[in-house]
Amino acid sequence: MLHDTIAAISTAMGEAAISVVRVSGPQALTIAAQTFKLPSKLTPRQAHLVQVVDAAGNSLDHGLLLHFKSPASYTGEDVIEFHGHGGVLVTQRVLDRLLACGARAAEPGEFTQRAFLNGKMDLTQAEAVMDLIHAQSTLALRAANEQLGGAIGREAAAMQQEIIPVLAHIEAFIDFPDEDISPETGSALMQRIDAVLERAQKLIATSEQGRILRHGARTVISGAPNVGKSSLLNVLLGFERAIVSPTAGTTRDTIEEIIQVHGIPLRLVDTAGLREAGDDIERHGIQRTERELDRADLVIEVVDASQPAATVQRLTLPDSIANRRILILNKADLGIHADWSTVVPPLGGSGGVKAIPLSCLTGTGIEQLRDTIREVIAHAGPLAADHPIAINARHKAAFERAAERLLAAKTALERGEAPEFIALEIREALQAIGDVIGQIDVERILDVIFSTFCIGK
Picture 1 (cartoon, rainbow, N blue to C red):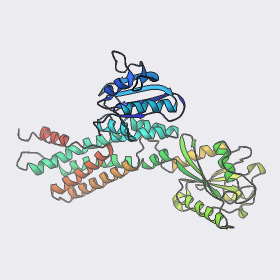
Picture 2 (cartoon, helix red, strand yellow; picture 1 turned 90 degrees about the vertical axis):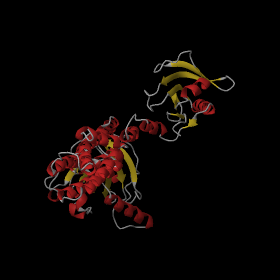
Picture 3 (cartoon, one colour; picture 1 turned 45 degrees about the vertical axis):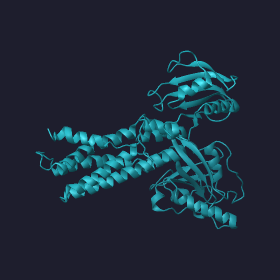
Picture 4 (tube, rainbow, N blue to C red; picture 1 turned 180 degrees about the vertical axis):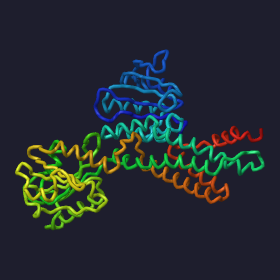
């Protein structure tokens, strides 16, 4: 399939000013010559005004054509891009003509896959392309750009550079025991392993940040019925998403929307009020609320602070999320009941509780809530370091596997076990690191063995 020439529409379907149709592969120029009326000389990376013609020579469209000559292209192959009029029908006709002239319809992600296979980017950069497209906040965009620029790949490559000499030394000791090789001490070898372990653990620690940046911090708005949960959702969104009614139990299902607060994507979840269910539908809604609380990154508990604190139903949360709760003293425009000063002394936060007087009617406290959301999420860990690198679940699994194998190698070294076992563990760690960027170069290990130890003279 890599020898096929592929084509696809690269812009979103729909009416627009322009559309882009992309062709990549060894026959890109040949197919373009049949599809377009090309100038006598096609200069790479220069826009040319061309006409698209059908099999009978009739005009289909006209626009700008660019040729990116291999290997200086996105995919590393010859690439043709046609920028034409952005109509659905005309763009499809251009693609159909390219396919009729010998191109194959590209599979999803195939252009980026070819870029990876042709060495134009590593696997982490290929993944970053979709992260960049799907970024929903400024921090997510920043993290995607860092990854696309090769930040994670460079970290993985640096770890490989640290561990390859250790493996090369042990392999040489196994394969050439009669050579006059002066081995490093066990302590020095373990120092190298510890250095790689430390880098792996720092990257693993960013996985939670990566999850939040890619998918949003799951923020559950919860509380008793009719305390203003849906009103708060609408205020944060800036439009009326949820139905607001003085009738308790109006919200019976969870409602999700994504917003950005100080660069952090929040997946807001408005939930049914917690109380004794009046019917089966409400019971299912309350069960969903309880499930959402179990998997929340942040809980915004809303209470009617105009009522005595003793009469208000409060949430009971597990310790794992107790420090990620914000208490909204809602309906502050009606006055905060004096009881709340004894429940949350002093007003505004005590003992890890963040309490904010707020009025959905007047907007009082909304900016303080936004600032507190940022503070709570950051202090809870995921964004505390504001690290530009944020690995995903696949990276995390690979780095955890590498760390596990390196710990096993270190243990084997400390116990004085056979070097074959140590080499096996290190080789598996190296493979796990290579899995992150999609490559492992055995030749580099051999190069280190022969150049460093001068085996065979």
